[in-house]
Image (cartoon, rainbow, N blue to C red; front, side, top):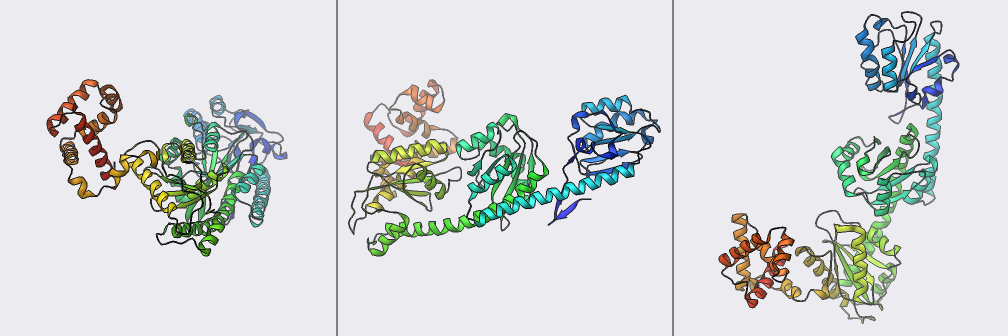
Length: 554
């Protein structure tokens, strides 16, 4: 009796508790399993000899005519209820007065243990009357469910037609369902969220961070949730995982555009169980979210293209600040007469936040920015009067994003640039260099160009100059020895020199014993034919190690 709408099965929402109020159950008695009276009924089955394979008949109500199939089989009576409950049936109606005056105690005990309702009816009640009334109620519930789902779809669609964004969509859906709703990107960034009713720790943390915590997304991947969504392109229900703060059930649906997943929409159960309406509503919401995201993507692409073209022209060596360039600057909000600073954001591990996300974050701080995705990272041009202002902004960004990124910071440009002023090209290159050096040296997440000192020179040295240096050759030979012997002498030398020859600090940085450190340093002196007590040799070796790390990418 299931109704199919655009290929999707519409399930009823009739519970056993509601069904017991019907006239056909006027003489019914619940003899066991009262804890399951809120189980939903999707269909009904009349059997004389019950089996144990109902895997494809979930939430069915089993109408057991007389008990003939189990009357002389105590073993079957013992295993029947656990088997039926395990198959997801809603409960059992047992006709007494034929072979059984009462339901066997072993079945009632099992029903209580599994919250599997057993309802008795006297023999004069015809099961055909029960079946007819149940399916009438089921059809009414189906119709009401479809009507409400269609109403939700109409409201959400109207929202988009009136210019609503993802934030308005989540807020509207959350208010309709009285549940918390969240939309995230394919890289697990929170795009929009709304809280209605209680939520668990996991949801609160995701909203606070602005992205799904890594341990949660990895757990979802390991559990196969995202793979299932990719395969089915349909909503999926998820149980609880208290160890990661997920103490409430969820339903998640993919947001699909041209068979590509643009994101995910989540609904948290809150203080009342998820229903079939939630699955229908989230599926409609995912469709509407796809429309919003396509529209927003088109706008972002146009804005990003305009910003990218402007920045490219601004950075060209032969660029002149002429009227057309000034006009483009006005479109993106770039003020030529103000000092600027460049922050260049890169990542070597996880996907970077989008340029739009970083731009939105900066604007939420009241900071104008020109955010443009470049080949190696994301360039952020900000208005800044001092070097320290950009440094503080970068440190705040890293605190928000964690260890996911490295940020290189340039110096500020002078205010009031002339028609031939190339200062932005210069500071852009400074920021890119600082980010690259920070990543190669595995240093702090924020690298300031003005603090690089000799590292800037080493970074720019041509390969032939490095190869001509005997100390660089020593470091190369030491690295080659490490590769062949599977040793760690180059990193040991770097730690020793970085810590100014302090054995304890260097050993702690490498997580080795002081004696191990002494042994390794002895091997370095033996292999490289150097004296690490010599200040001049230590200085040259330190510069050579940095040059090697910069030239070899870390």
